[in-house]
Length: 119
Image (tube, rainbow, N blue to C red; front, side, top):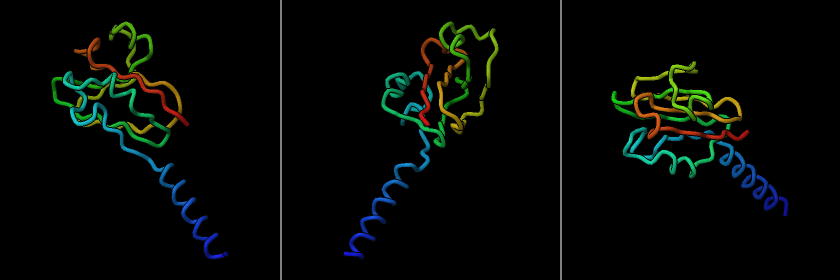
C-alpha cells in the first residue's frame, strides 16, 4: 500500500509540474506574425500565463508594437508606444497578469493581437 501511495503522489506531482511549465507561444501559429495568419482567431485558442513567452516571427514588412488599449483601438501610432520591435524574431516574457495589446504599425487594422495573461 505504501509504495502504491508514493507512486500516486509522484505521478500527481509530476502532472502538476508539467501543467505549470512555462510555454513558448508562437504568435499566429505556423504562419507567424503576418497578414496571412488570422492572429485574432488564433489568439482565442491560447491561454497565456505568467512565465510563458510570446514568440513573434515576421519579415521586415512587419514590426511588433506593444501599445496601450487606446492605441490598439484607434490605431493612432502618434500616441505613446510602449515598445517597438523590428528584428524579425521577438520574444516577450510574460511577467505579470493582465491585458496586453500588440499591433503591426503599417498594418494596424489587419494585424493586431490582444492577449489576457493569467496568473
